[in-house]
Image (cartoon, rainbow, N blue to C red; front, side, top):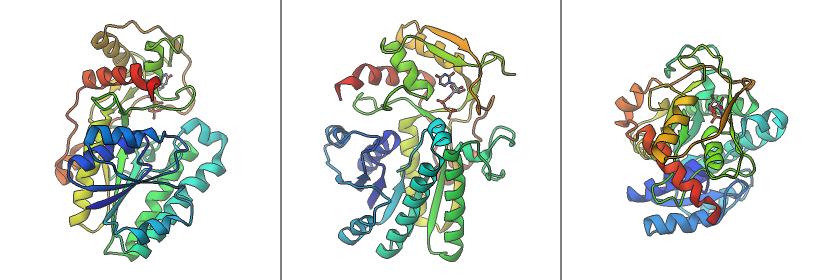
Length: 334
Ligand code: UDP
């Protein structure tokens, strides 16, 4: 299949492009490089031996339609979005405009190009603060705690409404839990601009001596060790999940929400200790106050992905920590 990947130079996007190429698909990347480096395309070529087509383009631009005019696109995986939770609280209009508009432009361009298969990059944040864990796809997913999260809720809604009147369309909504880790080659990984907000890139920079210490946000939650529980999933497992979702979209119609998680809750302290053990490193950390908006604990019910996609996470927490550290030592070379 010829697959268009928006945001294909980003963290999850680039790993997915590699797995798509490994599975024999042709890939077209559309990325405006607002939060990714152009050299990612070179690195994908080094890993796979294949250079994907690349358009440096904002998905909100009307030029997007030309990509569909110039290429026969069989399916789209839509990653391109602003994704910093804290920043979204400060800049709600930018987040709503960018994330919603780009999806609307994409749907219009897909319609013009006759493309009817879409895999959308959603998030566990759509389960909101009120559902019990583990989160299951049939729970209400209609609330979030940040403008970023609300864009995911709204886009899920938009796609559901669109599919209701386009029964020949398939939209798979992949709800990710906490992707971490990096490609084994250490050529691709999570490389946020500035000081990282997310836990693993922050740990990587502390381990590399670029940041002084980690602050664990809250040690007094009602969890076994007092720190928050999350469902960490290796980014390569997540990428493979997208290839499976694409194959599902080829043979099914309608809208389907599917969790991509490992299905287990791991605490911040568990992750820190694992990182230290597998990499032989001591991580300086302090326990600080809770971060506003953080939920104490959530993880996925991962059964639906197993059933519908024949997919489950196979990498261990050790693998995630080893690959993340390997990448963190390399990232300044890119
Ligand atoms: N976290 C932390 N210190 C940091 C960053 C994150 O203790 O510098 C904790 C955060 O409170 C949460 C977990 O790590 O419990 C994962 O946070 P992250 O921002 O990576 O993902 P989220 O679950 O918020 O999407």
